[in-house]
Image (cartoon, rainbow, N blue to C red; front, side, top):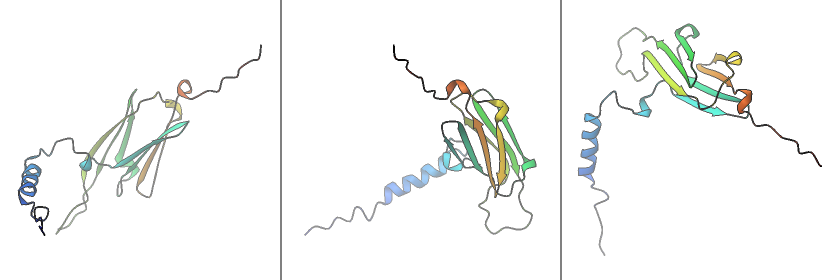
Length: 137
């Protein structure tokens, strides 16, 4: 009987992973570090952007809608005091959400409840599906 211990002692590849993490640029395109984390969904009539921004007031958030993007900017102030561990991000944040369809700008709505910012972007009438009736000749 042969027992393979290679799966238990994978030290060189783990060490390589540590060095890769150390050498990675902090400004890199790492989606795990994107703040605020958000969900993007849609239905037939709307696109929904839901961003988690706990501890941020509505006055600290700025929304900008362009032709193809929604920009969420704001600032989360750091609580004062001496920390032994601080994992919750603070400071200025900026998130750009690409929108692939035309939006009816006059009906865009935003609300914040329980630390979740919800932006409702109604789709323009020209991109909504239409049912076409067929006449019998």
